[in-house]
Image (cartoon, rainbow, N blue to C red; front, side):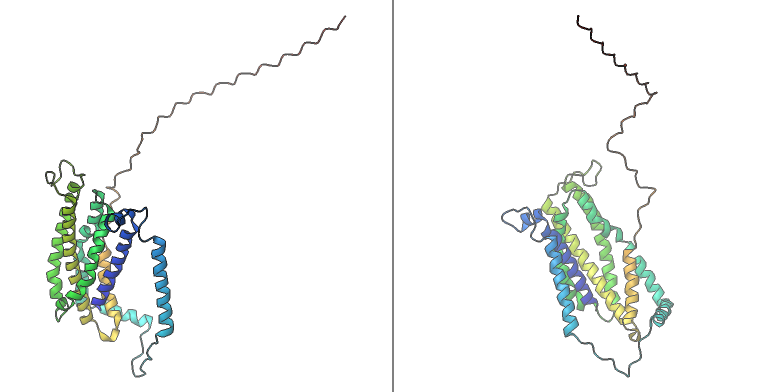
Length: 305
């Protein structure tokens, strides 16, 4: 289950980033075309329409050609909603599950900031986001095949052993991401005088190679952790509860990956106006309106003699 889920997530991410790269005209003209054009290879409307038709045909196929197997009368009846939540509460009351929940909620705190902010800072310091999306798309294809290659090595009788050796590698990748940020400023000429690598000269292809190496290490470490984690969940789950046990553990794990410290409103700089406002002129008392002159009467014509 962990292998198929990892494959599907990697494939979905690759398709999304691939659309961003193929939708940009500059990226297509630079890497995929001989004659430049003003638009990308794939438009947003065509992308949405294609996957809309795929969803419709898939739904119709499942509706008309797939049949559910009839339940065995000897099986135990399924639990209701209230009984299911009671079972989940009993699972959460186990000491081992509580210890595992603490690990899942805090394990990603060491590299969450590096994973979330590195790409944003690199783009801020000059790297075009289309180039970053194109590199990520190429590396995302490697993320599709990595779970299939590492599945047998990672998932075994003791899958957490693989998780333990992949965690330090993930921390090392976080340090590499921290070095990529000042190197991006040096590469694209946005580094200040006090930068770590102020005297270093790095070409853009060389920086792209560093990004590729760091992202490949990240894919290997994250794939090993994810597949081994899902294999461990599958081993410890109670078969009597079906997928409810695994859903509970996955929910705790996903919650731990999404919780990040938000911005502090007290430290947020106040926005300053671009242009200084003009000083308003002091208004004095309004001048009294001048009286309009009364029209002069027309002189009467003198009688002719």
